[in-house]
Length: 310
Image (cartoon, rainbow, N blue to C red; front, side):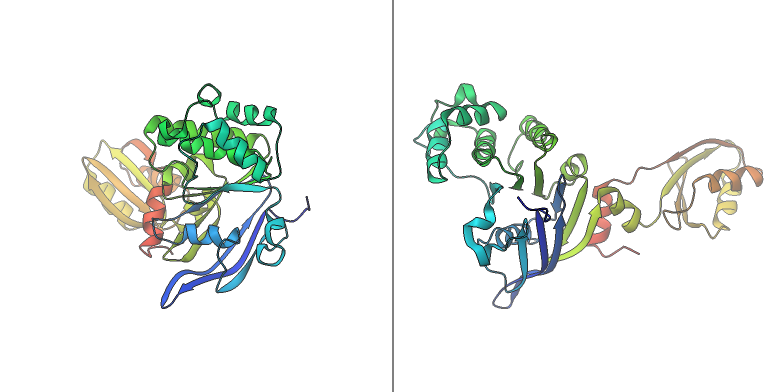
């Protein structure tokens, strides 16, 4: 395996007639990343993954996996790469174990011990003899990951792996992704579930209507795209005095009262919240409580897709 990045895409465009499904996407996934590809359904995530894997040809741009372009070198570009797009598919009348045996043989072969190993990893060894037609949705998703692991991948692409799972199944899938990442597998995970990306990923790209609107660290989404931080305070003195003090400051962009508390939106995320306490105390207001809202990825995502970023 080369030292090239697991995924490098530049200027990926896919048009279907007058419809632009993907519009100039750039992605770089580094070794060891759990990289979240985040966007609402229909944003262009699956189309992007299909272009990365060489399943469809981009209208413009290029994609490389470990320095290899699937459109130039064919299946050899997928050495060390595995995963599934739009859900794994199996023969329902065969057992999980036989499905894996068939896939392994089609991919050049694997010892029986490897099939048992991957069944163990996804906690399906006890159900390996059962027909896949009787598996739950979550079990089929896990069997899909088992099939991907047969080739000992260094890069795993997962398209919406928790979609359709119940809360317990989602938790189990997330724990499995964390386990695989801890073993050194780089993971590119597409999802429309904000909490999932926030919990699992160290880096994220946000796509909306085919256009990439952010790419970088998860924390950087909040830092670069939020419109300032929100501070809540309570005062034992007259609230009117506190409101007037805060409204006079250029560091504060908005002040409101909500259920007996004062909500302060700072002008940008770089301002230290201690400025609020200092203004109130120096102005004679009696401060009894101050807390800061943690801006979650969901709030940021809603802001950026509404075009409310700075």
